[in-house]
Length: 199
Image 1: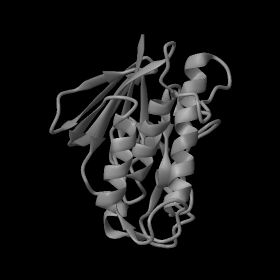
Image 2: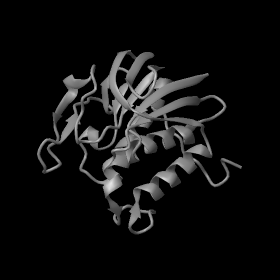
Image 3: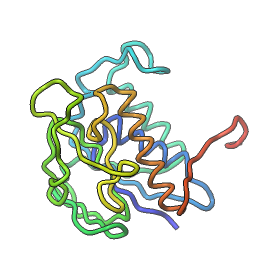
């Protein structure tokens, strides 16, 4: 049975979470992932020199292409270009609605929305100033436990309050995905491969 997860934000954090789910797919665990993205990620204006394993000076198109290719090799993901404007419901029955797509239902939701703004109805109560980005009007979402806003809803990347770096966004996004995998399993769970595990 597939677990449905909506990821709002398709930049480095959203794609990293999707990659973690893709790598954790197995005979006993499968995912139906939808990524909603406006195409406004901060990575679009960056060249990356300080992330391990990335080519020096890597830019967004190259990074996105590589990540999507990795994901696609393990899991089919639905990509939607649009803007999420509201998330309602609860764990197991979230409804994400917005501009450019029909309302989606999912069991879990991840907000990988960056730090520039957050205007998604149903979760505005979690918005706080982002104290680790020394620029005005940057925001984060207040979470508890393992980056959980409320049961079944998680925050990933810069929106979680980490320093504005590609590597910290990726780490936060990985943790959000691992938290969901653990929640599904009912115990701490994660996935590690070995050189022969996928042969």
